[in-house]
Length: 225
Length: 296
Image (cartoon, rainbow over all chains, first blue to last red; front, side):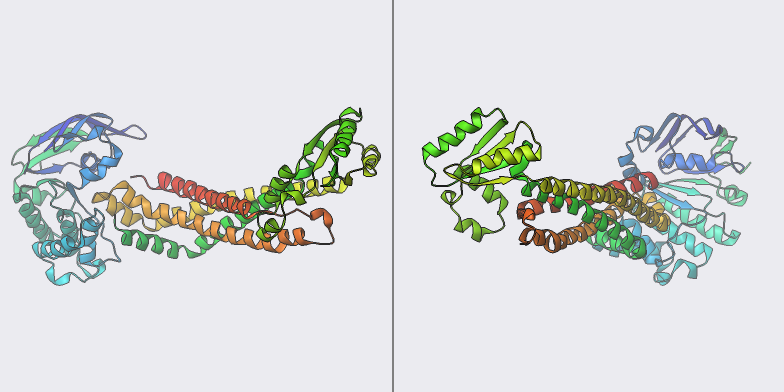
């Protein structure tokens, strides 16, 4: 599903974020990216949905070489990739339901589809009773559920998660991880960058460790370190 | 893409920056009004002085019923005189065509006048354009048989021409400056709109909205500003045509302004030009804003 071949990314000022990184992630896998801040985890994720482009090497997503992708095709790549973040990125002036519906609206889904899918996905993430609330009326965990609903409502092949539990307390984090695990079991490939040792050690999934832009460990059913 | 979405987003953007939007629309409007006025003036001057183009200093009008012999005698003199560089004969049909162009807006006049009502004429370019020489030369024809009248291009006509050219020049210069201001205002309005919606744009890109879906509301916002400004300018030009140019043309006192008029056709082409320029700077302004500040 995802394949990196000798990928190098250098930022301005000669900061190497990723150095000759290679990895092969199969369909339906759940992968943790671990490593200290600045080790290249976020760059890894941003390269996969073409928020960044690689300076060297090739990246394949769903069989396509995305380093060669025309910029007008990038949106279509992103429709197959759901993204969640530490800061949720919800729109404060839209309700929970509107935030989720927005993701379908802007890719041109018809109204009747939106009206059917939004309540269904909010039910899945356990927020059926809060559809009309605004983000600032929700707890952090609930906000992250909304953002997961928005990322998943389009049934993407891949979920990218950049520190999704970074702002949440441990108990809430467990709930979010259960949700991501459920999404993974529908066949969605999940790639999650995290600092959360407890989560990694409990879930026992594949772990890719980065250090100074190098992949230093790639271990099935791994632990944090 | 849904039309309703497009209109809603564009409307919301315009409303959010209402003061800048108004400034942009007025800048476009005023600059294009100046531009249009300059164009109308030069059209008017051209119409008024059509007869005097190419160094023609006087016109010998023949009687419509002059005999061929009288006509031949005049022609002979014009062709053989060393003081005359060249002369051009305008027959009744050619005069009628010119008349039609000049009074295209007054069909009642066109209906009343037939080619045979218009006198044929000789337009004369003397070798020496000095006013006294021309006067002396032209007056020699006044007494000849078959000649109805001799009309001179006086210095005043040339003065009108240069006055209007000067006025047009300053109008054009002013409109150009304002056009740049308008362009910058449109650019800024759109950049403000983009910045005001950073978060939404980020989310749109994240979930895979196509590039045009993100860009189009902003482009449309600029286009609307340009079009509104152009509409204002067309209105302004219309008012100036009524209040100034038509007054000149119908003025009894200043006979020199006779023929200083513009046809509807000329006005429409000025209006089309104004709309085209309005759309042009709008597309340029919003295009630059979108391509520089909306990396997709």
